[in-house]
Amino acid sequence: MLRHLINVTCARCIGTAFPYGTFIINITGSTVMGLIAGYLAFKGEASQPWRLFLMTGILGGYTTFSAFSLDAALLYERGELGLAVLYVAGSVALSIMGLFAGLAIVRHLT
Image (cartoon, rainbow, N blue to C red; front, side, top):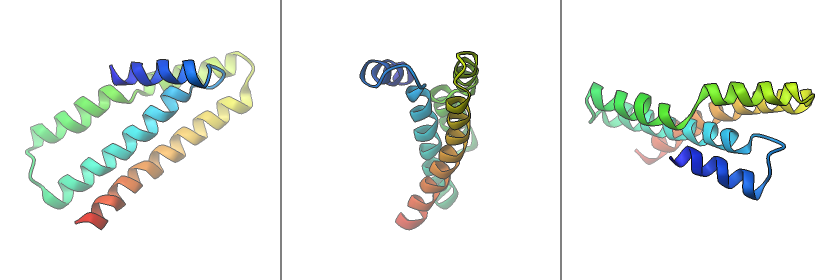
């Protein structure tokens, strides 16, 4: 639901020339994943089923690699090779940076 809202809002406010919604979703999802993983690593207060529910279930439903792949393919098919490369590289790099940022925030706060 939140993923759909972000996609629709981005399309209305920014446009559809670039898949901003999926881009933002993957980066924020990775950042939240880092926050949760870091918190659970330092506090360890959640059982394995809860960890899987939060990280695989909730965040897995929020972020989506299949939509990312489709958006990249659509950019390529439209002849936007530069944007497709920027989208793929930016998504991967910024999502990983977001994960590390989440971990760093938790380390700093604990």
